[in-house]
Image (cartoon, rainbow, N blue to C red; front, side, top):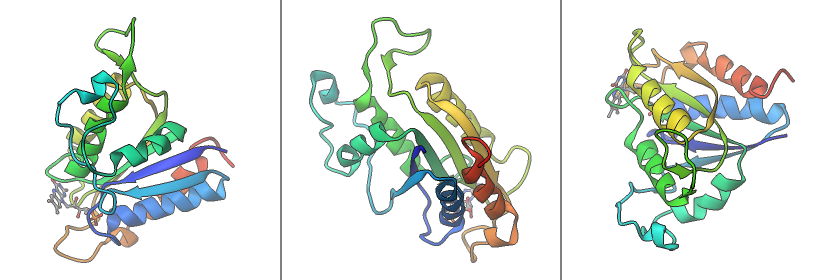
Length: 195
Ligand SMILES: Cc1cc2nc3c(=O)[nH]c(=O)nc-3n(C[C@H](O)[C@H](O)[C@H](O)COP(=O)(O)O)c2cc1C
């Protein structure tokens, strides 16, 4: 049994991303994992200010939800980043959340090439939705995920589900007309092996 924390950076409370998250959660819970979803709409997390107070042993100076989320982040085995595609990359809510990992980094006397600090060891996964469905649609988002979260922070990638063709935000969410909800359910159910 794993502890899974889903960071929901979607905009619409019943939108494509929320539905994708729900299906993943259902699958993961059926497989016996405990799942908590944190909506960044209900829990505001601002971007890092670069003030470096955290480098002097202080909690982050920002008055928002992040400090309360730190124990949940540290206690989770798997962090799932869920986002709609906004201007070809992750939503600014998810980006701001990731920037705040700066304040949970620890000193590393011997970091690997290109990393300067030590981050908690976690698994990670990516869930995304978009209106378009071209071969390049998720390219920037996937590149950021791989460079920032996997290569730099050092999380272990457990996979991604990129749900293109879900309709734009002018109209109703269309993800129920695709097979991505079933795929998300299966992804959640099998992320730590077939159950
Ligand atoms: C500000 C904004 C920017 C968007 N940018 C893109 C984009 O670059 N490419 C794309 O395919 N869809 C784009 N979309 C559409 C959304 O990614 C898509 O409708 C998504 O499924 C919405 O998620 P939600 O239903 O969870 O809110 C954008 C939507 C908004 C509101």
